[in-house]
Length: 70
Image (cartoon, rainbow, N blue to C red):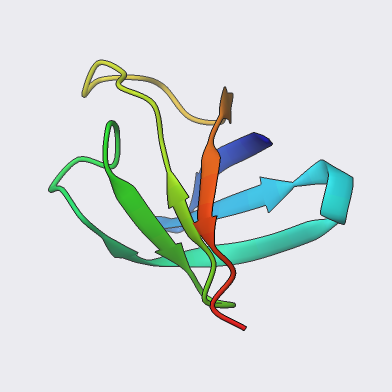
């Protein structure tokens, strides 16, 4: 699914346009978010693609939803 990752006020969030959903990223698997799993405020777990650590935000990426947490 296409997910836009952005940073506002030093906090990361994810926006899923198809679901009209924007949630904060509350937990990351790796120090950098790329190539690991992230947990959103609603409990969704997404796997993000490998990207360089200095990738500029906002960016839209193809993420894989691993669980809905609901």
